[in-house]
Image 1 (cartoon, rainbow, N blue to C red):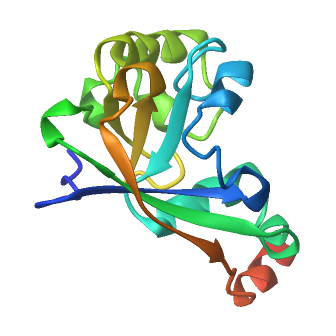
Image 2: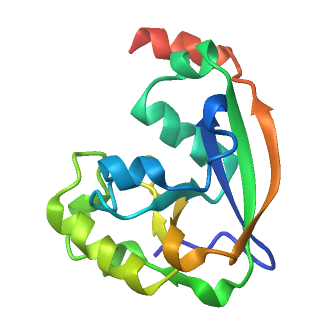
Length: 167
């Protein structure tokens, strides 16, 4: 069981190329290509419950080097009501291997798609760092149920590049 990240206010974070600063909440990328937790056709915003996990998630799909070369923005948003969030603990997943960074299975996508059809927000452990959380936002159900708190240019600590070059 992972401890829950919030006490009073429910914040989530997302890191996007600066080009998408105005469409960070559209879910268009996941609608077109699908993702770890959804098949193509469903608009889902993938976010993390802290900025560090958001950065790691993006680096895991690209590299720290990419975050140093192109401008990115870090967006913070707030979920209006915690009652709207479906929490999925690791032991509730039908297959524990779904928490590995391996390619998502169609069954994994179907499992989460069913949750996203019922719940505006799904909180699920991160595959990049299992002791942290990702927040999935079902764009169709969550409209008006979250609000942007801040958005700022992201600057990567270049000390991370030394480790990236060794890999």
